Length: 183
Image (cartoon, rainbow, N blue to C red; front, side, top):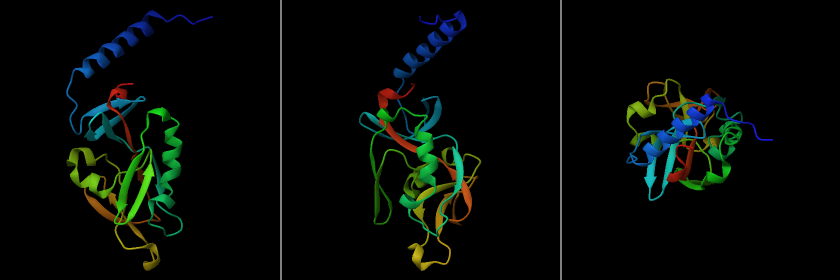
């Protein structure tokens, strides 16, 4: 037996549908704030019918590495990102090939921003009032350093270099079809 909607729930769904239809008529621009899977995102790249989105907020904190590694594919950020995927529609997520640190490349459906992403953004988008990790190391390879360092975005929006054993925020980046925005 189907559960009937209350009048309030029906009105809420109608309002959400009206907002969605209205958003379809708007031209999507870089750094617009959009909704996807009940989460707010900044549009950081638009290419044909796809958009790359960065979370408006931090989703968790972690040390980058407990083993002095400055390689994203070995980072503690991945666990937080993988836990966050459960809140998204995984079938919507598109694979991103990312050159994140000179000769380091990864294919992923969820990641954190690179230094190139951050450098292109206005301060109002960079700044989320918490310091968060990027995928880009600030010093050579981990084996050359007693304590490896990564570029982070300071709570003010400026880039800083911090040791990998410090706890900082994780701000996810995903790529989806433009038509999925608003769901």
